[in-house]
Image (cartoon, rainbow, N blue to C red; front, side, top):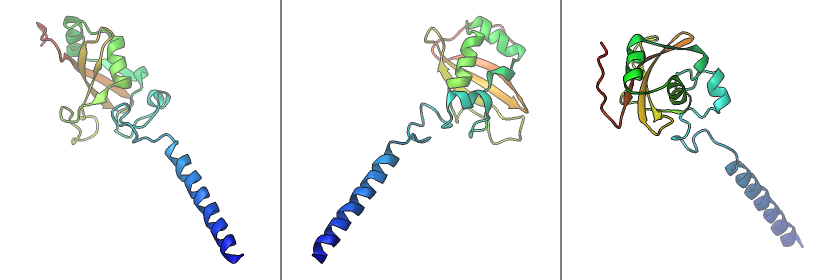
Length: 147
């Protein structure tokens, strides 16, 4: 009789542990797919918060340098495509400059435009604004007369 109680208690404990493990594996994880969302934040959080990677993905505070405007014009890249890369692009850490003082950092984000144009955009965040420094078409060389 005692052995039956011990066995049934052990089975109950195993079921509880199994249920706990299965429940935890179904919860969303910020590290589950690092390529789809480097920061682990949702799109809504991206629009309102600075991410764990240090870059604010809020498009409401974006400004464009003259150089960026010139490059966008000759490479046929629109503001909406730049904003899309800011919101959903992947940081290329090899092309970024992050080991500098605040307001001197540059983030190289890569993504695709509306016409599947593979682009890299250099963003420079400072305080509550993000400046677009330049943009590059990774799939095609364009003739540009920008200074």
